[in-house]
Each structure stands twice: as C-alpha cells, then as structure tokens.
Length: 294
Image (cartoon, rainbow, N blue to C red; front, side):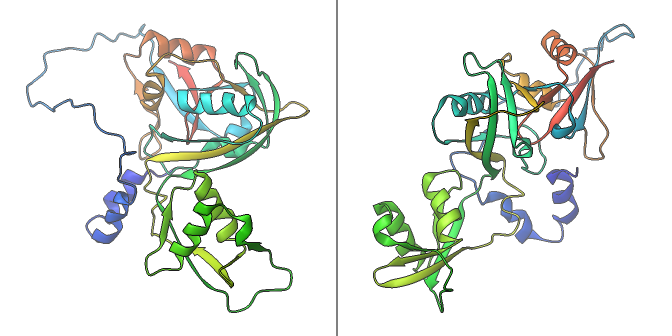
C-alpha cells in the first residue's frame, strides 16, 4: 500500500495547491511533537545485536483472512470497541493513526465479531460502523429544482435546533462545517446529503463540498460504532486485552516502508517481543500486522 509520504514527495514540486490539502484539519486535534530537538552531535553508541538477539518483523495482512485472534493495540480503539459492546446505541471517537498510510480503518472489514478480553462483555456481535479519515467537512444546500415522488423529505419540525441552524448556514454564501463523527456530522452525511429537508417553507437538497485529498491527508481516523449481540458461526476474533502504554508506537515501528519492504527492529523491547510471540496478528487503526520474531 503506498504511503502518503511517497505520494507527497512525488507531487510536491508540481503542485503547491495539493500539498496545502494537508492543512485542512490543522486544529487543536492535530498531534504535536514531543519537544525533542534534533542534534548533529556524533554518536558513539555501537549496536550490541548478535545473531542470538531477537528481532521483530511485521507483515501487513488482510484482517478478514487472519485465522486466530487479532490483538487490538491502540488503547483508544480498544476502549471504543468495549464501550460499544456495553452501550445500547452508538459510540463515537477520533484518534491518531500512528502509521503514515491512507486512513482506511480495518474495523470496517467486519460484519460480525467475537470479542475477547473485554472484562465483562465478551461475546459475538453484529458490527455497524462508519469510519474514515477525519477532516472538517463542508456542506452546501440549495432549493431543490424538483423532488422525486419516492424521495424522502425530512420535515424541519423533526430536526433539532442545531440541525435547523446547520441547514440555514449551508444555504448561505459560505459552507456549513462539521466533523464526520459528531452527531451533527452524522446528520449532515446521512440526512442532508442523502435526502431532502423542508425548512421555512422551502425544500432543500444538500451536498458535501469536495475538498481534494482532504481525507487522504488526514492524520486521524473517526468512528461511529454500534455493536449488537448476535449469533454467528466462527466469526473473526478481536482480543481487547489491554497492552502496555506505548505499544502502538512500537508496533508502528515495524510497519513496511514506502516500497513495501518490512522493517526489522534490531533491538526490540521485551514487551514487543512478547507481543509478537503471543499473538496471531495485531491491529492498529488503519492496518493489521502479523508479527514475527527472527
């Protein structure tokens, strides 16, 4: 899978406009650096790796093709899944991806799941998930030229005050903005952009204003998730047992490089080696890996 870093490098010289798309979601949600300053001082540390030292490697795999349990590594994703199993309704969240690859969360690959390690809600569930790269969505609305006989028209009286105000804003000269995982974002995506709204005596049709590569360059993923108990034969298994803090970053360090070559971590932590040995596969937000110890 090509990384966004490779894509940017290939077009940056030709298109300043395209590179500017990376800033579409540049708000308080953007991860910041850890404050570490680079240094040009030479290092005198020598590797002590020998042939007997363990080394960890990761191979990206299709989550639907894993035979065995997939360990959920990011704590935010693990808690979201467990909360969805406990709640009667939807849960929402957005999280840093850890890996510089297109934001296509692997959780969307499943229609049913068996959950383990949830501390009280282990079981099999039907999955209803909406997810993607998080960016500030923009919506416009205009009076409908015609309304098909079989079209859904939502009455303004059925909307919340916030939703009515959003529709009114979308009819102005500037688009109305929202994030996709919010309740207002769900309304904009699934009602305003997919049906018709009657408000103030007028029927409006909405649409999302497309922003070139805005989702592709997003550095966070969002989820709207609900889990419903069900029965299924041999469903895929997600292991939600908590992992050590920082493990998601450690796993991200073994992800294949821009050319698809797996990285070999020469001096892995004992915890990473243990995770590699005790799991069939691990899941970050936007990829699933099979870890091996060389």
